[in-house]
Image (cartoon, rainbow over all chains, first blue to last red; front, top):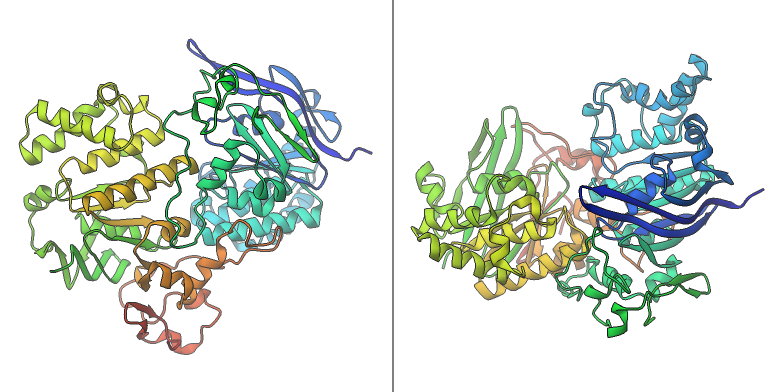
Length: 310
Length: 317
């Protein structure tokens, strides 16, 4: 029996937009153990959502391999994939059909399998609605009649109704209020423990990632530039980009002011990846060789970092 | 000297819904006053009411609504237009929807100065280029000729800030100015706003749901709930000594790196902000409050925890 939930090896994906070639994911490798939570952080445009869609099988990689619980994702049909891995997306306003009743939205994955009797579907939907903290009465409503937090609960119920093994959460709380965010994070943690789920948890909010993830990978312009167990990464970040991300977190501590993260105004462009270390134009400690040499992966006890100076 | 902006018992209704219910606060020159709360608690409507930009059907009433001592309630549309974008300017959350996609950055920026100050195109362009450089945009000349879609989100938000500063405003109202941005860019934009505010002596009314931002930039905080200011205090005092159960609840919801143990549940506030109508009595938070009892459905007194710290709760100070 395998103990690895997600295995990503040398995966690359580029998009063509007119004359521009956008390198979204650039030869990325990592694995997530069963029951683990890998947090992926990085700025918009770093390729984290593309990575999520590759793992979900919604996009095909240009090269490399993705296996989920030992099975290659590209070889699986849609139904088998849906039983194994499910998404929860950022915007519960856009990801739910506005014309469908909540019950039918949650039932959809079961119906799509074509293998469940109506009574079984009803039973599982009821069970799932209760499990995520919604009432049967809410099941009869439309998405517009629910709050943002309730809608995200619906998205979670839909993701879990087939009892998948892995859930890919792409910014699951970014559109929510802080009071609601806490409820959804608590619910996700509780469900993971009870159902022994594995999460890929994508977020730009480092405080949230620290709270839910067992390991964190930092993504910059298509590469994982640093990966560590959560505690190590937050206590001893090695990569200057990780340090800048951590410095940008505005903790609720009055009197500290807004930090200078030292990244300058050059913005990363995935269609124009710098030579050498791709972070060097923004790096506060870059040396001349950083513009020439590509940093190799330096392994660390439980992770690794791609920086010439680390 | 009177406050730069003085809002006293502001009420806004949309038909049978009260969006703002007796909110009072002031913004002084050189001060950052933060309005904080969940979505639907009336923060943005308050800002729009001050600017007289309420959507159709919105009714505004106040005991006092004054900018630099001038009564905004009695100002006609033309008078308000002369102030808006001029002495009082506003920055919105989504720069893509508040910039006109069909005009260049330059023509949108210079329009305000030409309209309000009668500046000629050349002087206005110079000022626009100056301000773009001031907000940290490199090659401002190039940017002036570009269209909004050619800029990144962070750059667009900087353009919005520069545009708001074109006419040397006294008061800047910023409604979630960094919510759509990356954390790195957010830190840069907030740092910029803090610097500009200090250098230019602006009064800044900053609306946010992010208590991290509040802690780092606010001079004073007003916590809004269901259209009311339920607690107001200087920033350090509010974080050290929150008195209203809603403020306490909000603070417990925020994950703080290194402070909360991994996988331990975060504090949360069950339920949602209720929609209340005119004539609602008592505390609007009572259905979500763990301390609530039957007295909470009666009129709630405003207590003072300190001379500059007040809160709206039946629980004694």
